[in-house]
Image 1 (tube, rainbow, N blue to C red):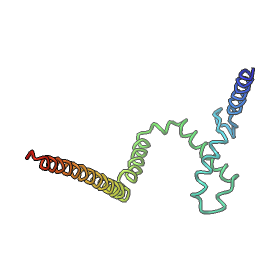
Image 2: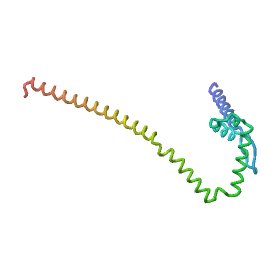
Image 3: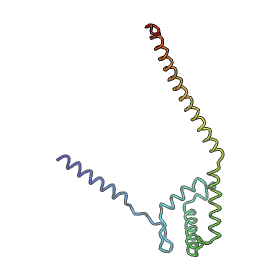
Length: 156
């Protein structure tokens, strides 16, 4: 009987948890029947909040106006098909190349990684040689003890 109650309670608990996670997104505004949600605005606002130095630019209402203006411009550019323009594509490609250079050719990070690899390699060699030396020492000691034993027994 207790197992049935436990199972029923667990099933009801999982049902409530799954329902609680299905909250619909709250629409902030729409442009041409395309909704823009509050979670996107909050994510972008929080991401850019640390970059803004002027306190007046941290005003939520002013930032909302900027966000709406930005979305209107993007929507208009999409309608005009500017994203398919060859000049835009080449400019975007050059931006990507320029940004990727900062990440792929960072000499400071590369030097740190090389130094870290070198230190790790030194540790591996030290451990290897210590274990090898210990193994060889044990082998020599074992061999010398066997020679000593055979000598003491008079077999040599």
